[in-house]
Image 1 (cartoon, helix red, strand yellow):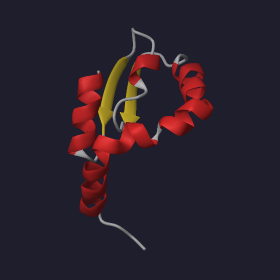
Image 2: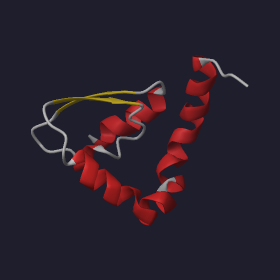
Image 3: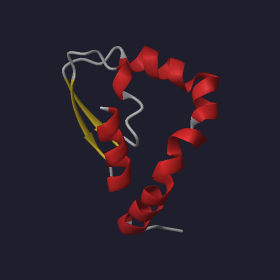
Image 4: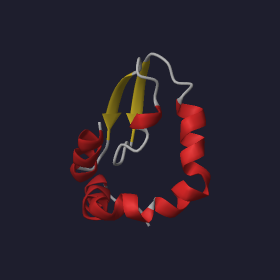
Length: 83
């Protein structure tokens, strides 16, 4: 089954308010640690595709210049608040 970008956008717009809550279990099981280890190594200009709610932002070094994109305006809104 294939979805159009509009269908995907709609699904993630609906899902955005609950996204962080539903991601809490993987975060506790080690995703947070992986974010810290991997993203701390980033340097310079970073393009984050499918930024979601911006959960990665806090793990980038402060001197990184981050451009973040997402298909879902609701996810981007959450990411902008977090930024």
